[in-house]
Image (tube, rainbow, N blue to C red; front, side, top):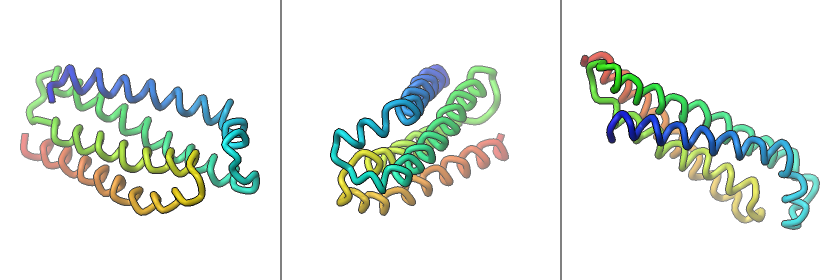
Length: 134
């Protein structure tokens, strides 16, 4: 993945994270009610969404920074780290988003969330490795 692609992808992911966060603040309760989710689960679902958005945004910004490192001429190839962070966002935040809006049976997706966390950890390890190698 080229540095420009990393920056563009990270920026798009950050924008998506902002949109999902805004939805959580302004439309989540109404959506959950329309979907027929139990009202006593609204707070838990809102917390899942908030956690997903936080990790989504942090790592989207990290992808932008990694692309910036590439454009600045910094030594090292951070594409592997950026790709692992992308996978982590999809699995970690994506599973939390699905659990937030999905029926109670989708809580089983919580088993995917740690895999996303592992991908994020791998991404950071790859970034550290590249920094030490360069």
